[in-house]
Amino acid sequence: MFSSLLGNFFLRIYNNRQMTGLWSGYDSANDTITSGRYTFSPIRGTVTTRSGQSADLLPVLMIADDQLGEGYVSEEFFLKTDESDRSFIKVAEVDGKLVGFAIALVRDPDEIREMLRVSIPRHLSRADSIGVIKTIAVAPAQHGRGIGTRLAESCVEEFRRRGVRAVCSIAWKRGAKVNIRGVLERQGFLSFAEVPDYWREESMRDGFDCPECGTPPCQCSAVLYSQVL
Image 1 (spheres, rainbow, N blue to C red):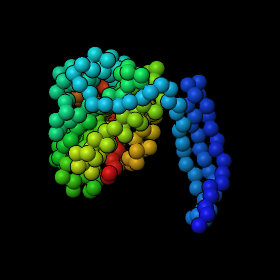
Image 2: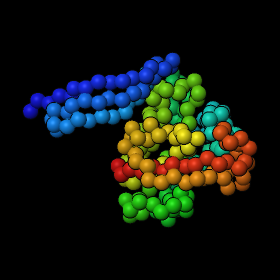
Image 3: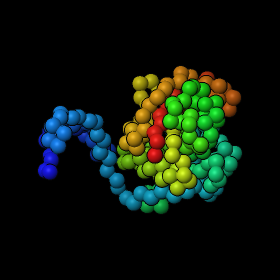
Image 4: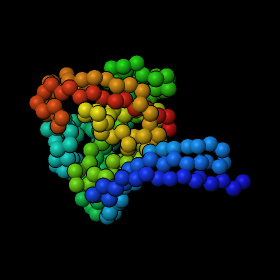
């Protein structure tokens, strides 16, 4: 059966050549009018992802301090987050230079409830183990190039390799903006809760400076996402 999608794109083009916008049109196969939001990001240079290692510490800390707040990712935490059955790190490189990283964990449902501080959806609570994309950060000069998406894809691939089928993620909400919303939604994640002042106690305990709030306490919310692989 022949089918077609006929419609219009309404796009906004940014200086970094990224385009975002809406599509609306007719889906002849399903005889419906459909619409959606899309983002197009140019990839310049060769982007690769790989497992992180201790030698990546300095560029990771530089990106983390700039994008997440000084002290949010500690040296000790990074070095403990190794290629174990409980955690892993993925880094992204453009032409051999590290430009972003992701930190991921594997936990059981009880640990996830404690970590997220909310009731978790049934598809998470019944899983033997749950993957968590805890952090994704990309160097400012590389924003809008799809690198965050590549890191999320790499994490999802690693979860699948480890037999993890339920995944969640914690997205930092600054004002009205959820920092990795587009990255997660492109991977099929759906939001299920928002937690006000999520990092308040952590920021005061560890003394990290939030890029939005400044010195502790952090008053940003967390938007929680999940999906089944």
